Image (cartoon, rainbow, N blue to C red):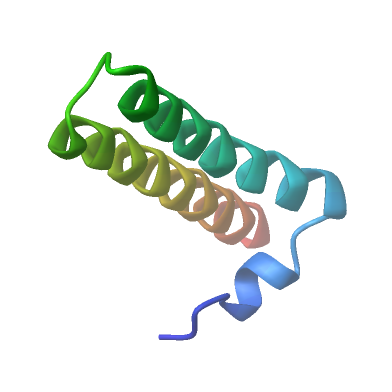
Length: 71
């Protein structure tokens, strides 16, 4: 699987930006929580992982919607 799949590159720029901002937002929250001492390293890592998974779910949802509209 490619790092950035071709389905993601075909999304409109606004949707690509939205997905990237969701992932970046979770990353910033995880790093901030770790540096501020509100979370340990494992919890901060889990926050980042949840952000990555959430971004992937949004991309998957867009693919399913596109396939449903073809029928």
